[in-house]
Amino acid sequence: MKILIGGAWPYANGSLHIGHIAGLLPADVIARYFRAKGDTVYFVSGSDCHGTPVVIRAKQENKTPEQISNFFHEEFIYCFNKLGFSYDLYTKTSTNEHKEFVKEFHEKLYLSKYIYEKSSPQAYCNKCNSFITDRFVLGKCPSCLSETRGDQCDTCGFVLEPENLIQPKCAICGSYIEFKDSTHLYIAISKLEKQLKDYINSHTNWRKNAISFSNRYIDEGLKDRAITRDLEWGIDVPKKNYKDKKIYIWAENVLGYLSASKVLSDSKNESFEELWGENARHYYVHGKDNIPFHTIILPALLICNDSGYHLPDEIISSEYLTLEGSKISTSRNHAIWIKDIIEKYDLDSIRYFLISNGPEKRDADFTWNEFINSHNGELLGAYGNFVNRTLIFIEKYFDNKIPEGILDDEISSKINELYEICGFYIEKANLKDALDKIFEFVRYSNKYFDTQQPWKTRTDDLDQCKNTLYNCTQIIANLTVLLKPFIPFSSEKVCNWLNICDEWRPHYIDIGYIIPRIDILFNRIDKIAPVNPN
Image 1: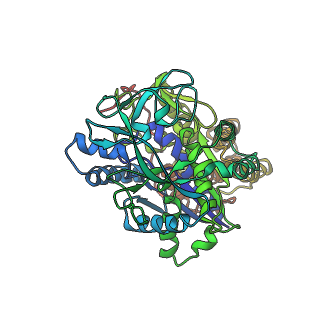
Image 2 (image 1 turned 60 degrees about the vertical axis):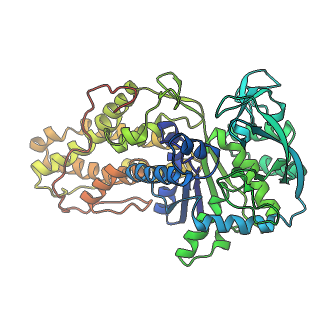
């Protein structure tokens, strides 16, 4: 089967922090699993280079938006590569391929009965001498009176229009703004209400936040949305009399999943139409603040384009990650930047913690004490200890050769069961459940080693000692394959030691196989790190 896995596209106006990675890591785990299972995977994402946030950063640093977005795009690539993200293509929205795809998509979109032209009030800042996008209009929510921005209230979730805000101000300079009429193209999402409602309700397997947020979004009343804007940085509108306008960012960045997979399909001489046909399976992985863009906006664009594009199947929407008990804040530098942490800590430990203790279905908190305890207690103390104590024993007393033995029926049954149940959990994006099952087996394996006492049977009953180590080696071979989607770096080491591939199936090491010289999988972390490691 062809599997499309789309990771959310981070804004290229600032560095990545642990909250971003916590929401995106599940995509890599799922992609690695499906490849190991033998499916054809298209794992795509990229940097979101357009939009006002990039322009603002560029003005602050006296650079062009292209310079800013390219700088952070390269930084993102470095961080994702270091963390082992196995993208088949990580691109950016400023490429010619993306721009041309989006323009062709929009040209057909404009022929739809759902697209119309309308003049409406747009926020304008006289001090900045420019129109301001909705998210950069600040004011009080007319529903709950909380301070909010002009697209949606973060406190009550009310969907807003900037002109409805109380005392609207420019987020860039702080000046009060006025509203000027401007003509734009709109998409009549309101006419899709029943179709979108039926679509959402047909996916009862989605996470609760995706279903509830999407239904609330619809129940509050879908509003038609502008798909063009008065912007200076973005993709040109492919329509006469719109030369001074750009395609609104929300109507082009989600199309990156299509443009990226088109580039990838073409490079592999494979069918883009088949990937976006009815027999494919699509996963979209992101944080909960991006839910409506993947359950409402993207489906609406695909439906209105009327090219038969496949609608999202699986919405993998994480909750929020906090830091030491409080909200991550980039403006206050209360964040752990990925570019810093990847240079100081074991990469598998970062991945493991952000999956096993991450915001999969509820908000989660990152603390340094828990991170260190997770590494020392689980990766090093349980899994790493079992691998090293077994293989070092074989190295020391059996000349690195796998001793003779017979596979224990209970161990064989547990191994077979793990591939089945962990595969089921991963396909449902229940990654914590999958890791819990694997580490149950890790604890079982350590208990088995201790109960069998090979250090004692080496002199009292050599055959039993050999049998114990033979079985422990088979356990290690399968643990490393089961864990490779989660912690690929240490798993690749063990796969090389045992000369096995990562196919999602039981693996067994031949008697007499000579293990090359091994090293320690994980080192202990003793020092508690500061909140912002520098």
